Image (cartoon, rainbow over all chains, first blue to last red; front, side, top):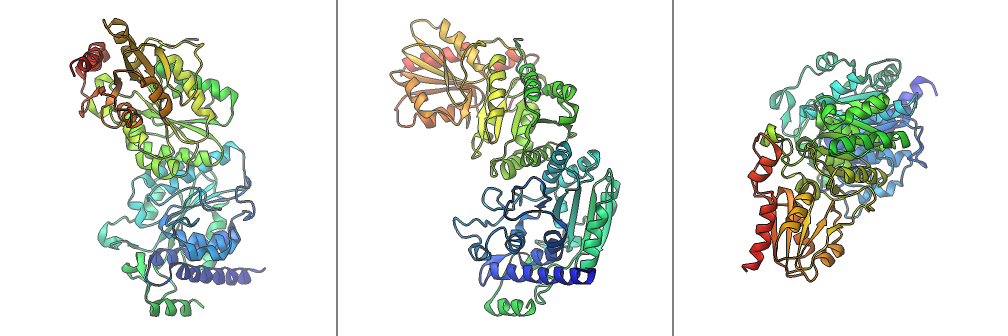
Length: 274
Length: 308
């Protein structure tokens, strides 16, 4: 597959992931549309280009690991796992049902392909560090831990404990991606609780920092590849994104952080994502 | 070697375990010299991680190590191990039933000089309320070694609570130890004292010195899961039950015993800390006495049944 074909394939997958998110949420029930859509291109690149794993053997030792620190967009990861073959697509229709393997937030005991429970925000990077240290102890080379963090989530102080610790332990097998969609649950980050400059903060903490357009597939895969050659320091990819990307009426709309779709909106979203 | 300090027993047992099993790893938060994690650090520098003064990050990092197939022990003072890291323990370790061992060192009032900020009087209650969590509190240094080994060999999250100060050994190397089983320290036929941690030796002294009553003493070093059938059996035919712990009377051993005996219609007394924080003292015995954790207080609890 040449580069253009690869990018086209990943874009198609990303659209499919967004569509899966909408179908999973359905009509009349709240779901995290906004943050799922902002992360969809990144997750597509990780699951269908970058990461090494075996959906038939989710615990295979020689695999890359992915942690969804912004655990509230679990439905996006579930859609990716279904698309990758970890479980049948039909399971998505049962998301959040009592007894379902697909919980509102990632549950390591219930869902194949989930590496750890997340959702109490700000903890994924620390868990990723533990996996990074474990990989080094086991001399597992050429494998990585990826962790997707929301920009609003960076309010949580534990991220910065972890940022220091990742640098202190030279976690060069760890790549964090910040989905910088600039909105948090109650409004614009810049108005609610300013956290910029994210890049300079990570730089000051000793990280390799790459900034990209989080909806430009070429930039996403280049950034992921570049992080492989960095030694002795962790990499953070700051991905500039649009919350609700791909669904016109949800783009940059705060209420779709955890929004409810009407029948009309549901149909329109599916049409736009077809 | 026989230790008379739980921290030393714990730290040396970690080293022994580290020799036997290369999956054991230890994390400290700038207190390795106190938790005795330093012993493991000296023996296995590659498998010891200094995580800085950042307990929340340390605890979640341990979760990640457990998911890589390691058996991480996290060390800190009990106030931080159980308090500051509560959410990290709950969200990832306990919900996921991950194989992380959390050591609450300098528990109870044992960090006597540092005062209320450093004295965990509610850690058992917090840890006991979390589903999937095993909670242990050894009676002495000898039992600390056995318990540390036992929790390393079971799958799932465990919280071990140990004391800062030297203490006498009341169990012996030869006593069999089974995780989850309360053990009889002294038999008696009128009253039973269920005790945990340092209060086991205090309870034994009380039982031996009390006149006119025959008192049984049971060491409950596994507080959760509590062997309810054994507790009921130990309390059967007793006129009253005393629970003794260096912990708040809310939510700790006493509560666990009361829950276990809820259908037994037995009078129960609690010798523990009355819904209060600790305070600084010049030495440990002085502080234990100040909070009513003495032989005399246990005897008074038993005598109080006679006045009913």
